[in-house]
Amino acid sequence: MRGGFPTRRGFGIPQGVTIPELLDVLWRDYVASTPQAERIHALLTARGEALRNDHVALRTYAAGGLGLAALARPFEALGWEPREAYRFLDKHLRARYWQHPDPALPKVFISELVVEELSPAAQQIIASLVAQLPDGFAARGDLAWAGRPWAVTLAAYRALLAESEYAAWVAAFGLRVNHFTVDVGSLRTFPGDGDDGSLRALCAFLVERGETLNASGGVIKGSAADRLAQASTRADSVEVAFADGRAAIPSCYYEFALRFPLPTGALFHGFVPASADKIFESTDVRAR
Image (tube, rainbow, N blue to C red; front, side, top):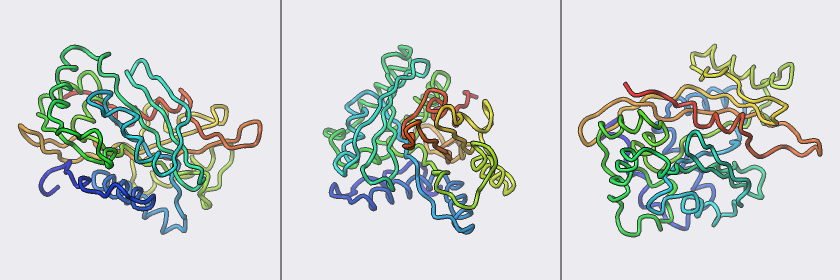
Protein backbone atom coordinates (compact mmCIF):
# COMPACT_ATOMS: atom_id res chain seq x y z
CA MET A 1 0.00 0.00 0.00
CA ARG A 2 1.24 3.47 -0.87
CA GLY A 3 3.02 5.07 2.05
CA GLY A 4 2.85 1.92 4.16
CA PHE A 5 0.21 0.49 6.43
CA PRO A 6 -1.07 1.06 9.09
CA THR A 7 -1.69 4.78 8.76
CA ARG A 8 -3.14 7.32 11.16
CA ARG A 9 -6.14 8.06 8.94
CA GLY A 10 -8.38 7.65 11.99
CA PHE A 11 -6.83 10.67 13.71
CA GLY A 12 -8.90 13.82 13.69
CA ILE A 13 -12.36 12.22 13.51
CA PRO A 14 -14.72 14.60 15.36
CA GLN A 15 -15.69 13.48 18.85
CA GLY A 16 -19.32 14.26 18.03
CA VAL A 17 -19.45 11.48 15.45
CA THR A 18 -22.89 9.97 14.76
CA ILE A 19 -23.61 6.22 14.70
CA PRO A 20 -23.66 5.98 10.87
CA GLU A 21 -20.44 8.00 10.70
CA LEU A 22 -18.74 5.85 13.32
CA LEU A 23 -19.68 2.58 11.61
CA ASP A 24 -18.64 3.99 8.24
CA VAL A 25 -15.24 5.07 9.59
CA LEU A 26 -14.69 1.62 11.11
CA TRP A 27 -15.74 -0.16 7.91
CA ARG A 28 -13.59 1.99 5.59
CA ASP A 29 -10.52 1.52 7.78
CA TYR A 30 -11.20 -2.22 8.02
CA VAL A 31 -11.53 -2.85 4.28
CA ALA A 32 -8.36 -0.85 3.61
CA SER A 33 -6.45 -3.72 5.24
CA THR A 34 -8.99 -6.44 4.39
CA PRO A 35 -9.83 -6.22 0.68
CA GLN A 36 -11.55 -9.61 0.79
CA ALA A 37 -14.27 -8.15 3.02
CA GLU A 38 -15.20 -5.52 0.45
CA ARG A 39 -15.09 -8.16 -2.28
CA ILE A 40 -17.36 -10.56 -0.37
CA HIS A 41 -19.70 -7.73 0.59
CA ALA A 42 -20.04 -6.86 -3.11
CA LEU A 43 -20.66 -10.52 -4.03
CA LEU A 44 -23.49 -10.81 -1.51
CA THR A 45 -25.13 -7.49 -2.33
CA ALA A 46 -25.01 -8.35 -6.04
CA ARG A 47 -26.90 -11.52 -5.11
CA GLY A 48 -29.63 -9.35 -3.61
CA GLU A 49 -28.69 -9.50 0.06
CA ALA A 50 -29.05 -6.49 2.36
CA LEU A 51 -26.21 -7.26 4.76
CA ARG A 52 -26.42 -6.73 8.51
CA ASN A 53 -23.47 -6.93 10.87
CA ASP A 54 -23.72 -9.26 13.85
CA HIS A 55 -20.77 -7.75 15.68
CA VAL A 56 -17.63 -5.69 15.27
CA ALA A 57 -14.49 -6.83 17.14
CA LEU A 58 -11.62 -4.68 18.40
CA ARG A 59 -8.35 -5.57 20.12
CA THR A 60 -6.17 -3.65 22.56
CA TYR A 61 -3.64 -3.89 25.38
CA ALA A 62 -4.58 -3.64 29.05
CA ALA A 63 -1.84 -1.04 29.47
CA GLY A 64 -1.32 2.69 29.12
CA GLY A 65 -5.00 3.44 29.64
CA LEU A 66 -5.88 1.61 26.41
CA GLY A 67 -8.06 -1.12 27.94
CA LEU A 68 -11.67 -2.19 27.44
CA ALA A 69 -13.25 0.79 29.19
CA ALA A 70 -11.29 3.31 27.11
CA LEU A 71 -12.17 1.73 23.76
CA ALA A 72 -15.81 1.36 24.78
CA ARG A 73 -16.31 5.07 25.52
CA PRO A 74 -17.37 6.25 22.04
CA PHE A 75 -19.79 3.33 21.73
CA GLU A 76 -21.31 3.86 25.17
CA ALA A 77 -21.73 7.56 24.37
CA LEU A 78 -23.87 6.52 21.40
CA GLY A 79 -26.05 4.09 23.36
CA TRP A 80 -24.23 0.75 23.37
CA GLU A 81 -24.63 -0.95 26.75
CA PRO A 82 -22.18 -3.40 28.40
CA ARG A 83 -23.19 -7.04 28.56
CA GLU A 84 -21.36 -10.24 29.51
CA ALA A 85 -17.63 -10.33 30.25
CA TYR A 86 -15.31 -13.21 29.36
CA ARG A 87 -11.87 -14.49 30.36
CA PHE A 88 -9.59 -16.53 28.07
CA LEU A 89 -6.82 -17.74 30.33
CA ASP A 90 -4.78 -19.61 27.72
CA LYS A 91 -4.64 -16.54 25.49
CA HIS A 92 -4.22 -14.08 28.40
CA LEU A 93 -7.30 -12.10 27.40
CA ARG A 94 -10.27 -10.34 28.95
CA ALA A 95 -13.24 -9.46 26.77
CA ARG A 96 -16.72 -8.02 26.88
CA TYR A 97 -19.45 -7.21 24.42
CA TRP A 98 -21.74 -4.20 24.16
CA GLN A 99 -25.24 -4.19 22.69
CA HIS A 100 -27.33 -1.29 21.38
CA PRO A 101 -31.08 -1.00 22.05
CA ASP A 102 -31.54 -0.73 18.29
CA PRO A 103 -31.49 -4.39 17.16
CA ALA A 104 -30.36 -3.38 13.67
CA LEU A 105 -27.00 -2.20 15.03
CA PRO A 106 -24.09 -4.62 15.52
CA LYS A 107 -22.82 -5.72 18.88
CA VAL A 108 -19.33 -4.50 19.77
CA PHE A 109 -16.89 -7.12 21.06
CA ILE A 110 -13.74 -5.68 22.66
CA SER A 111 -10.87 -7.73 24.03
CA GLU A 112 -7.71 -6.72 25.84
CA LEU A 113 -4.40 -8.51 26.34
CA VAL A 114 -3.46 -8.94 30.01
CA VAL A 115 0.13 -7.87 29.48
CA GLU A 116 1.43 -8.85 32.90
CA GLU A 117 0.68 -12.51 32.15
CA LEU A 118 3.21 -12.58 29.28
CA SER A 119 6.93 -13.26 29.54
CA PRO A 120 9.21 -10.48 30.83
CA ALA A 121 10.62 -10.06 27.32
CA ALA A 122 7.16 -9.58 25.76
CA GLN A 123 6.16 -7.21 28.56
CA GLN A 124 9.25 -5.11 27.91
CA ILE A 125 8.46 -4.81 24.20
CA ILE A 126 4.87 -3.75 24.86
CA ALA A 127 6.03 -1.29 27.55
CA SER A 128 8.35 0.29 24.95
CA LEU A 129 5.38 0.74 22.59
CA VAL A 130 3.07 2.21 25.21
CA ALA A 131 5.83 4.56 26.35
CA GLN A 132 5.61 6.27 22.93
CA LEU A 133 1.97 7.37 23.45
CA PRO A 134 1.52 11.15 23.32
CA ASP A 135 0.18 12.84 26.44
CA GLY A 136 -3.58 12.47 26.69
CA PHE A 137 -3.73 9.86 23.95
CA ALA A 138 -5.90 7.43 25.98
CA ALA A 139 -8.54 10.13 26.45
CA ARG A 140 -9.12 10.59 22.70
CA GLY A 141 -12.71 10.43 21.57
CA ASP A 142 -11.62 8.40 18.55
CA LEU A 143 -9.36 6.02 20.47
CA ALA A 144 -11.13 2.87 19.22
CA TRP A 145 -10.10 3.65 15.63
CA ALA A 146 -6.99 5.77 16.19
CA GLY A 147 -4.62 3.46 14.32
CA ARG A 148 -1.05 2.66 15.32
CA PRO A 149 0.39 5.39 17.56
CA TRP A 150 3.87 3.87 17.97
CA ALA A 151 6.86 2.82 15.93
CA VAL A 152 7.59 -0.91 16.09
CA THR A 153 10.41 -2.92 14.58
CA LEU A 154 9.90 -6.06 12.54
CA ALA A 155 12.17 -7.81 15.02
CA ALA A 156 9.88 -6.81 17.91
CA TYR A 157 6.80 -7.94 15.96
CA ARG A 158 8.37 -11.35 15.32
CA ALA A 159 9.42 -11.69 18.95
CA LEU A 160 5.84 -11.03 20.08
CA LEU A 161 4.46 -13.35 17.41
CA ALA A 162 6.49 -16.23 18.79
CA GLU A 163 4.55 -15.88 22.05
CA SER A 164 1.20 -14.31 21.19
CA GLU A 165 -0.37 -13.63 17.79
CA TYR A 166 -2.68 -11.18 19.54
CA ALA A 167 0.19 -9.17 21.03
CA ALA A 168 1.93 -9.02 17.66
CA TRP A 169 -1.23 -7.97 15.80
CA VAL A 170 -1.90 -5.00 18.11
CA ALA A 171 1.77 -4.00 17.89
CA ALA A 172 1.62 -3.96 14.08
CA PHE A 173 -1.88 -2.58 13.49
CA GLY A 174 -2.66 -0.57 16.61
CA LEU A 175 -6.20 0.37 17.62
CA ARG A 176 -8.73 -0.49 14.95
CA VAL A 177 -11.29 -3.13 14.01
CA ASN A 178 -9.99 -6.69 13.84
CA HIS A 179 -13.07 -8.01 12.04
CA PHE A 180 -16.64 -7.37 11.01
CA THR A 181 -19.16 -10.22 11.15
CA VAL A 182 -22.03 -10.90 8.76
CA ASP A 183 -25.34 -11.78 10.46
CA VAL A 184 -26.13 -15.00 8.58
CA GLY A 185 -29.64 -15.10 10.06
CA SER A 186 -30.49 -11.94 8.13
CA LEU A 187 -29.55 -13.47 4.76
CA ARG A 188 -32.44 -14.54 2.55
CA THR A 189 -30.81 -16.35 -0.38
CA PHE A 190 -28.97 -19.10 1.51
CA PRO A 191 -31.58 -21.63 2.64
CA GLY A 192 -30.18 -24.92 3.88
CA ASP A 193 -31.06 -28.18 5.54
CA GLY A 194 -30.16 -28.67 9.19
CA ASP A 195 -29.49 -26.22 11.97
CA ASP A 196 -26.46 -24.63 10.32
CA GLY A 197 -27.56 -25.21 6.74
CA SER A 198 -27.65 -21.54 5.77
CA LEU A 199 -24.11 -21.03 7.11
CA ARG A 200 -22.87 -24.11 5.25
CA ALA A 201 -24.55 -22.87 2.07
CA LEU A 202 -22.86 -19.48 2.46
CA CYS A 203 -19.46 -21.12 3.01
CA ALA A 204 -19.91 -23.28 -0.11
CA PHE A 205 -20.88 -20.19 -2.12
CA LEU A 206 -17.73 -18.36 -1.04
CA VAL A 207 -15.40 -21.30 -1.71
CA GLU A 208 -16.91 -21.73 -5.19
CA ARG A 209 -15.97 -18.12 -5.89
CA GLY A 210 -12.37 -18.55 -4.83
CA GLU A 211 -12.47 -17.35 -1.24
CA THR A 212 -10.38 -19.24 1.33
CA LEU A 213 -12.02 -20.11 4.65
CA ASN A 214 -10.32 -20.74 7.95
CA ALA A 215 -10.41 -24.52 8.40
CA SER A 216 -8.58 -24.79 11.74
CA GLY A 217 -10.73 -27.14 13.83
CA GLY A 218 -13.32 -27.34 11.06
CA VAL A 219 -14.80 -24.61 8.88
CA ILE A 220 -17.83 -24.14 11.15
CA LYS A 221 -17.28 -23.62 14.87
CA GLY A 222 -20.13 -23.93 17.33
CA SER A 223 -23.61 -25.35 16.77
CA ALA A 224 -27.28 -24.96 17.59
CA ALA A 225 -26.50 -26.50 20.99
CA ASP A 226 -24.10 -23.61 21.64
CA ARG A 227 -26.73 -21.13 20.31
CA LEU A 228 -24.03 -19.76 18.02
CA ALA A 229 -22.22 -21.10 14.93
CA GLN A 230 -19.43 -19.18 13.18
CA ALA A 231 -17.12 -19.38 10.20
CA SER A 232 -14.50 -17.01 8.84
CA THR A 233 -12.15 -16.40 5.96
CA ARG A 234 -8.40 -16.71 6.19
CA ALA A 235 -6.83 -13.37 7.05
CA ASP A 236 -5.66 -11.18 4.22
CA SER A 237 -1.96 -10.40 4.03
CA VAL A 238 -0.89 -6.79 3.67
CA GLU A 239 2.45 -5.03 3.55
CA VAL A 240 3.25 -3.16 6.75
CA ALA A 241 5.95 -0.54 7.23
CA PHE A 242 8.01 -1.34 10.33
CA ALA A 243 10.77 0.80 11.77
CA ASP A 244 13.43 -1.53 10.37
CA GLY A 245 11.85 -2.77 7.16
CA ARG A 246 8.65 -3.80 5.40
CA ALA A 247 6.93 -7.16 5.51
CA ALA A 248 3.66 -8.76 4.40
CA ILE A 249 1.82 -10.08 7.44
CA PRO A 250 -1.72 -11.36 8.20
CA SER A 251 -4.12 -8.48 8.78
CA CYS A 252 -7.83 -9.19 9.27
CA TYR A 253 -10.51 -11.67 8.28
CA TYR A 254 -14.24 -11.55 7.57
CA GLU A 255 -16.53 -13.52 9.86
CA PHE A 256 -20.03 -15.03 9.53
CA ALA A 257 -22.25 -15.76 12.54
CA LEU A 258 -25.51 -17.69 12.80
CA ARG A 259 -27.42 -17.30 16.05
CA PHE A 260 -30.09 -19.61 17.45
CA PRO A 261 -33.04 -18.97 19.81
CA LEU A 262 -32.98 -19.64 23.53
CA PRO A 263 -35.70 -21.83 25.11
CA THR A 264 -37.62 -18.59 25.73
CA GLY A 265 -37.73 -17.99 21.99
CA ALA A 266 -35.51 -14.91 22.21
CA LEU A 267 -32.41 -14.92 20.05
CA PHE A 268 -29.11 -15.62 21.82
CA HIS A 269 -26.89 -12.53 21.67
CA GLY A 270 -23.86 -13.53 23.73
CA PHE A 271 -20.74 -15.55 23.05
CA VAL A 272 -19.75 -18.97 24.36
CA PRO A 273 -16.30 -20.51 24.93
CA ALA A 274 -16.73 -22.95 22.03
CA SER A 275 -17.31 -20.09 19.61
CA ALA A 276 -16.00 -16.87 21.17
CA ASP A 277 -12.56 -18.46 21.59
CA LYS A 278 -12.40 -18.81 17.82
CA ILE A 279 -12.50 -15.05 17.50
CA PHE A 280 -8.82 -15.15 18.39
CA GLU A 281 -7.82 -18.04 16.11
CA SER A 282 -8.57 -17.01 12.55
CA THR A 283 -5.33 -15.08 12.21
CA ASP A 284 -3.28 -17.44 14.36
CA VAL A 285 0.13 -17.88 12.72
CA ARG A 286 3.58 -18.79 13.91
CA ALA A 287 6.77 -16.80 13.67
CA ARG A 288 8.86 -17.53 10.59
